[in-house]
Image (cartoon, rainbow, N blue to C red):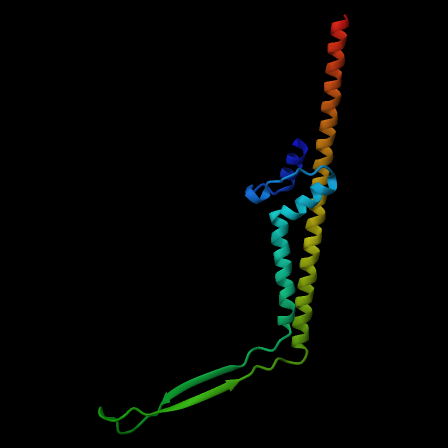
Length: 166
């Protein structure tokens, strides 16, 4: 139980605060379970994964044409005889425009978005690797400490036994 708490807490960033969802029902017992728990609950990894999902969602949009623009307007017409009782006159106008990108520009935008998606996916994979490595390092350090404690306890038992014999 002590091992589970130490390894899980060590794998979390220092700024992360525990909440009700981070409580482990049954503590992990081996390195693979500790790593899986850290990969699932690490807030930095969750943020990186959300960013990678956003990059992935942007790929299909990057290759689309800009939306057309529709404008409706009215202009006043200048009159030489202006008096107060005269009705206002105006000329309505309607404009529709569509921006046409240069040849190859949409393909280039799609390629850039795909590269961004790939970079985000690699960033997630790298962060997951570092998290697994950090958990493994702490797991083995705690296991080594547990082994030292066991040796010390056995030594104390032998010394007590020696004391009673002597």
